[in-house]
Image (cartoon, rainbow, N blue to C red; front, side):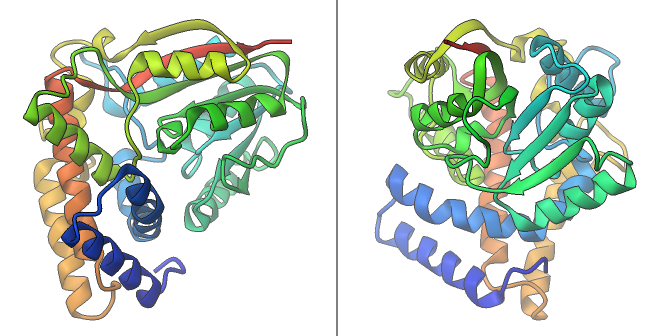
Length: 331
């Protein structure tokens, strides 16, 4: 079970359940407790996500007749081009997962990339993938909180983050720490999970969808797209370019299609409502036989509700997982 103990996992679930029962569900409390819960869940779930998503855990705008995984690779290479990555470029990948994008970008550009991840099991998986693909000399991992990056001041040529900085409760603090590591004039780019201008806080359905996305993905209060721009400017960056890429995909293959069940193949099954329903029963069985820690089923319930709300948020165009930004360090 990837190093997670039944005791620690169960205690975290119980604390989160009590928090809900007591009505204590503030953004700060959710950040402190649920982030820990999700981190431990991913110790258990990473292998399954690799079955459905491959080694790149993110969304992408998808063109007509384009395969799901091909769209992920194209999305990563778009970012690499915008950052002007080249052989020998020293790069940080903030919140790198098991390193799928890092390996694709390193193979495509020749850049040398250090992935930052605070989940030990994902790092272990990622190091194995690096070795198997012959990329250990180009790609590496550091276990660290991305608010305290293991890099010297002004030592990094470029930084990117793919759907990871949304976990930061304070973007200015995170972006300022990223800027510290970068050389003057270096580029920082990424894809952010954001609310769009169509989100209406007076609409109860909008509020419900937002809450379920946050709880199902261990997020603090989600930011609007323009708040990302403001945070970058406040952190020592010049904003070069921003655009929501979600509308750029073909209408017949929206970015949330991967979660709707419309991609019918064995490889896609784990991403579909049916596949998620099947796997949602598995934690209950594993808990009963003592294989999975107590509380695994409840975490699975939260994550499934979050996945459904990702689809709803996309259909209503109130949420995007791919607000692209490109910024340059001033100085």
